[in-house]
Image 1: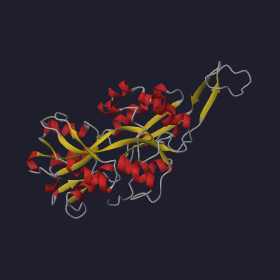
Image 2 (image 1 turned 180 degrees about the vertical axis):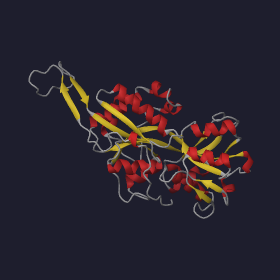
Image 3 (image 1 turned 120 degrees about the vertical axis):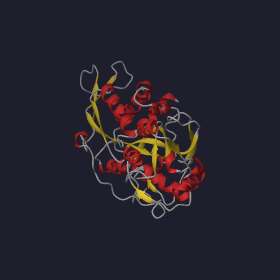
Image 4 (image 1 turned 180 degrees about the horizontal axis):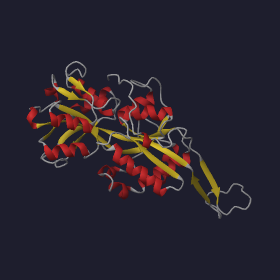
Length: 339
């Protein structure tokens, strides 16, 4: 894997509400007469109140992380008394792990390969990060895409062409470089390399300044939907490299089809390298807060499906089965309660 340089912090300052605030959980006994401990499940019961402002690191506006994360943030803010979640636009996975470790954000989306590297302290991460998972949320499909007028029909055809491998500090860049290498292409020397977010990649394809782009995202990705509505979209087969990537890097890579009809004009399924998206927090988040965030997300699946179809993949019976990072104890308590 090629090294990913530090990420320039260019974000919307209006979304940086509450970054770095310490999280506190206030446990208020209901009906207690002396302020002493009240056992959960007793006659008097126990109520939890939260007084937290959390910042959620997502991704670029043209992908899935940002709108889906916004939906989760709105859900948590409306359903959990005393909790406010604001969404931050970022360059996605690598960027998000660095922000989480520094304490600038408290929730983050990241792709499986980057999460595995962060948890193990390898590749771009010089030491293991102090993180755990609230669950596997949905799968990312590694789109290598172009338009029919370029004549490109395979990943091998990208040699010598102008290719955006994804934004600096994104999982798209990490996985795109690995796929190019598996196809026998040096991602630094054998292409004219550009590093753009998915919306910028689509714009560059449309104005002819690049020939193809890579994007790791859920189905469907809005910017690619827009491209397919105006141009003859071509999706390249990346699934053929999944076994090689899994053998070399880890079992967070596998192959699935992008179903026919996912994008306008796409008449056949296209095999893709796939990796799971993980919702990640720091280990020092209060366990009660871990549990209520996890429970609220998974028990409001139908509401989140109205935000993005990727929410259809939410499954509490399997979401905690992540071999490359520990599941947070609060999240595990919820998953155990439904399994």
